[in-house]
Image (tube, rainbow, N blue to C red; front, side):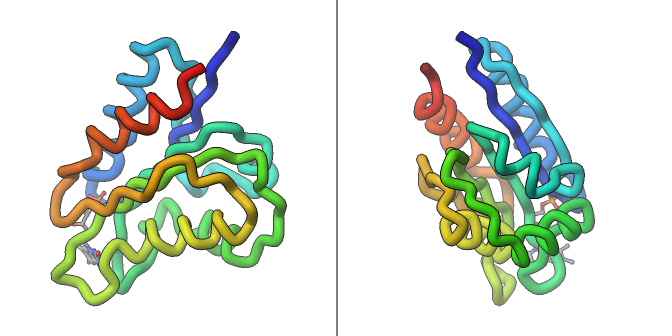
Length: 146
Ligand SMILES: Cc1cc2nc3c(=O)[nH]c(=O)nc-3n(C[C@H](O)[C@H](O)[C@H](O)COP(=O)(O)O)c2cc1C
């Protein structure tokens, strides 16, 4: 049986994008059928049809989504879509020298819970680097493997 994984990412300077790329390669090597997309490419209708979703986003501005995730966040924050079939986890990148640490990943995570999505693994907050993202990715793949 096919085991699908959508990897949705947003990044300003490439750190979160690399985390998404690494997870994608690892997932494919383990036999997952993957779909890697920038957050802004994903509509709420798309999201509601996805089953396993790994979200990787850095934070910019003051707790904001990167440019290639802004449109997605505008749609998500205003959405009342039922996402009960969606199984997900968030890897949030940021830096604790900023007031709103990992704000982008946090707000996406909180809104997905509000919409009924199933958080199958706690959010990983990465401080100043991608440290922690590898074990987060491994744990996530373990959770969704059939
Ligand atoms: C202009 C700017 C604003 C930032 N704002 C925040 C912030 O509000 N909260 C936070 O936790 N990190 C913030 N960061 C830190 C980045 O999220 C962090 O360096 C991250 O690893 C960058 O990942 P990326 O290369 O995928 O964009 C900011 C970084 C920059 C350059």
